[in-house]
Image 1 (spheres, rainbow, N blue to C red):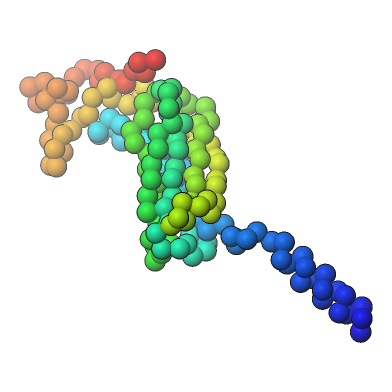
Image 2: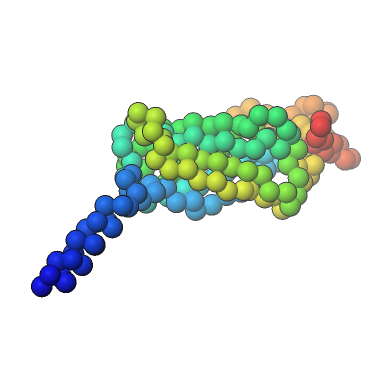
Length: 166
């Protein structure tokens, strides 16, 4: 009987050593670069699934490595308790290079600013951004042809492609 009580005491003592904040609330489910050739921009897109509830007022802060150099691009979003999916899309990026991994850090913060989870990953493109047009091909809500690209309403013989200023 004392052996059973000793084993129970050890079990209770070790369960008290688990992470105080509980399991991670988000799980990474997808990551990629999105190239919108019609509007001539690229962004990071990261998707996450909620695996645990988060306190009301929690936020997620994502930091995306800037492919053009300089400071990381930061995105902050509120986490809504009833939404099971989280989609993070960065501000527009330039100078994305094929097969180069770019760092992304995602932190979940509670209502008082305490860190609940931190994820680090990389996103790699399978194409260079120079496949994109230099200017948006369309403009406005009706996707009208951009007159700077389609002069006289006609497509140019060759589309000018995006260049990295760096």
